[in-house]
Length: 173
Image 1 (spheres, rainbow, N blue to C red):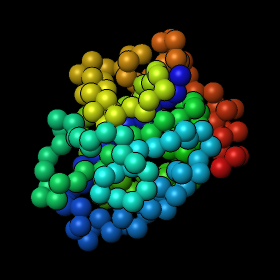
Image 2: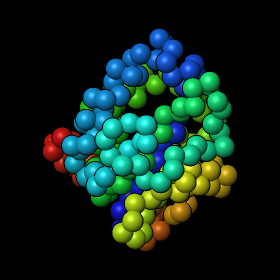
Image 3: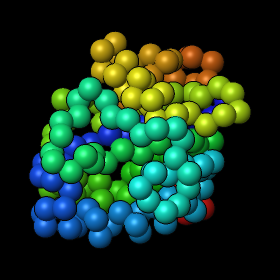
Image 4: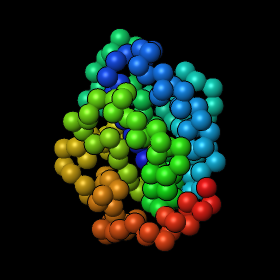
């Protein structure tokens, strides 16, 4: 089984507002780092951008509020394990961008990300990520939808991140 990740955030101001220039300056370098991250299987692209093909029609969760530009940052990806994903998320360039998130994004009233073990050979679709995020928001963490703070293994058993595996993933980066 593969670990799926969906993230969703909403800018405080419309995407093209100069206050978001720092986000846009980091976006492509972060994706370049992501594309070479240890443990990444694949990521969905966006219909409006060059790069990987999108995994279905791009949709947003019920928390989305239009800012006049039809855009809210969201990602969808597949990983081999929790530790590789944790290493990418909380270390390196992505961690630098994450630390600046309060400059660009609303403080969410929803979980900013959701993880789940994806079965089958097909990629998850954007609509799957949205459904999992909304489920997590409504029901809390479970084997069906969880966070790094309350992870589950592929069998549905609560687990913890293996810190030694996280360190090995960082060393590969």
